[in-house]
Length: 475
View 1 (cartoon, one colour):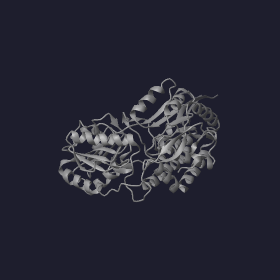
View 2 (cartoon, rainbow, N blue to C red):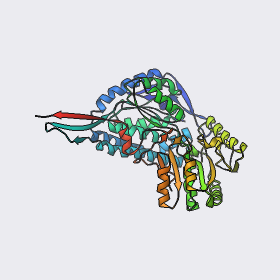
View 3 (cartoon, rainbow, N blue to C red):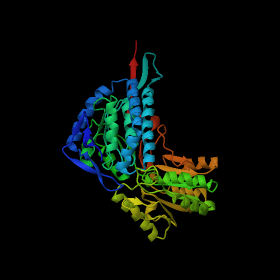
View 4 (tube, rainbow, N blue to C red):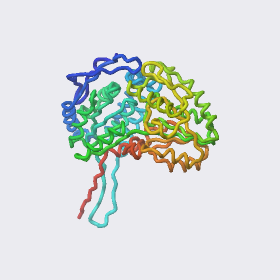
């Protein structure tokens, strides 16, 4: 059970909500705890707190903010196993992956602790002898973050760390399926000396009332969201009246193109790392695996053999490779995608059905055609469709035939081909011979219907800064 202290929410201090909602374990369906159910009134109070805190936080030096972020990073790493177990308990990720995510999450804080000290302005050339011109970068203001359940630690720090480093304050609405990790991270921020109101966490069973308040208030200058394209479009429309700056990391439908010069065993290893982590429940998991005809049969046989070795089970066991899906709605979507593919002529080579509860067998499907639902909707489950192609041009055309453009993958030993294909793919991220390319110091984000803006690297902190031009007359 989660401690009852997590029934609180954090604004200027820890508060008890007038109501709570249950959070259930996807592994066994049990209620693991209750979270504060915040709404419009709590949102209004949080904005007041955030604005007051911003006035003082923005006045701190970058070196002060950097030192505090460092302490936060160290505190998180010192509690790595505890946070990992909490994460696995509330959202079902295998604990080995959760431990890796804690380190990944701390990596964003480390990076932005350094970036805080690299927020620089510039001197500009002047056309007049009695003029001087310069630019400075300043924090945009209070920010509102809506985070997903599938990376409950990393999606907090990927947003909060650059905001705090820039001098902004942040209000976080964590996913209702996994609010406790966010509360623990905020607790550690407060413990290392994070000033009151700089980082707030407000869980909610229904995000709509809170978000409406946030979107309508002009004091919220920045909104960052990771989630579905449908919700992203809604937030984009709602931001218009107050002209908020937006970062939207939305849905994907990632292709993985394997050329026939690939080492089959290595290619299979990378595809599995890409497809099956977190039971296929990531926005950058490959949804379509295109294999060139020359190695299609060998690759498919090797993939089936390797996937058959993946262990489905208790997410808290170090032996588990595949944990549960997040909820029944997610399970029904995966089942519907497989059933539609089979009804339209696909062949299930491995898996294809629910094991028990919210556990789904790791699945490999062939004989897939473009009209099948799983070819144009994100499955968000452990299902790997394998397709065959003949030419490079065909692979690129088919890979780009989607409104989404978050991540794509290529496996080839031909350097020229790797560059050609990377340039031609209409995606914000391309992994070449790398199924897990995301790192804190690189940009993360999509094109087309997969979002706007970037997180990670110096691009991430730029999202929280405004550029001011100063022209100075001198005698």
